[in-house]
Length: 119
Image (cartoon, rainbow, N blue to C red; front, side, top):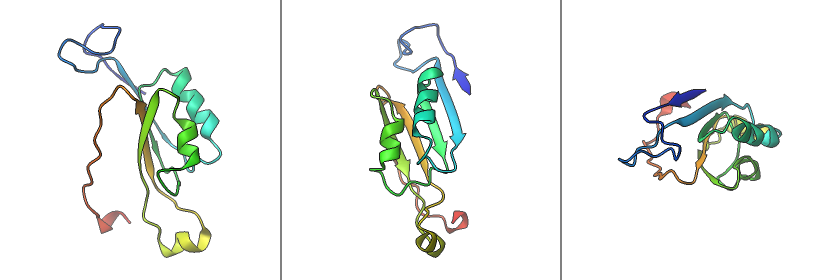
């Protein structure tokens, strides 16, 4: 868990529009399918602003599990790992990442391209 502090502003935004006192969390989930309540409760109990989940093992952006993890005032972006022959045979898509964040954060997803070194 990390906390970035730049002012004591309780609104988490300083006079330059910079987000302050932002609380981050990260977890390697090894599948979010059966951990949605635990992960959602963790975001709430730790008052996180941004939560990064690796090894989500989800199939697509409309994943029910990802929607259940994100509290009502949160959004998420995700990236799934391309399915290999192993995943097609086992019906499990290992890999994947999701970033769950408060809706007040502006965001834009940029694709960096495909890197075969990581597959």
